[in-house]
Image 1 (cartoon, rainbow, N blue to C red):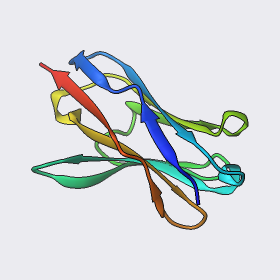
Image 2: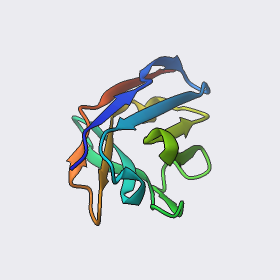
Image 3: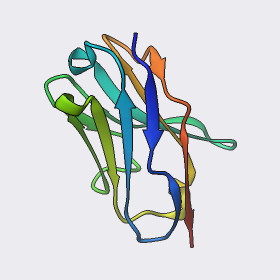
Image 4: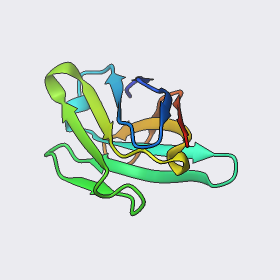
Length: 115
């Protein structure tokens, strides 16, 4: 079991960049998969990116080429670098992690992209 807390959300303009951080507690986080999801009232929860314990990554189609997920196991932290942001990226972004599936979730951080 891990506790997750997201940081770094805010209000930016289209074309800007933003980096989200997810700080995790727990001894075994380095062995967990971790990921980012986002949610809006109209679209529901959407997969954004995931990173395996070995560093392998996967991305949702809408963010490929613009977003990069990474992790620093020494700091128990996962990052989401978001470039070329669009108004359609506006959402609450959630960090998630787990040994085999996303069992643990953070409270979310709001990202708003103005046009």
